[in-house]
Length: 125
Image 1 (cartoon, rainbow, N blue to C red):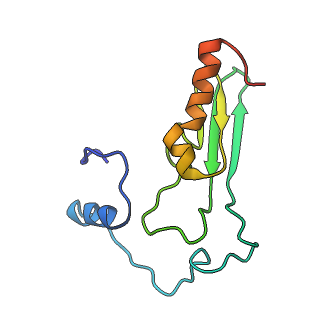
Image 2 (cartoon, rainbow, N blue to C red):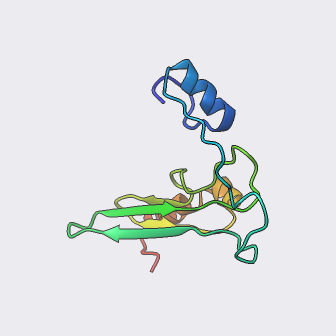
């Protein structure tokens, strides 16, 4: 992304960027995408998993992974890959969020939780 003014590209924009800067492009056809049709898990809204860890020196880390949401629009980017949205950690605290990704993104939920911990000098526990 050093060649772009943007932080994230997806869908056609990502493809155009890859072609312009000579990244290898591979098209995979014939794979079924279970997220395009009925959800076999009773239309469960998602399957996000998060983890927060602390090491022996007190350093905090947060990680998250999501399979996405059923019937999403092409090119949709959820909250998990965006720092401060689905997860955030710094020297004051760590937080993870799960739920409606668009709302989480608009409010940068995880970062706001940690900001409040820092501002109030309080633990979220």
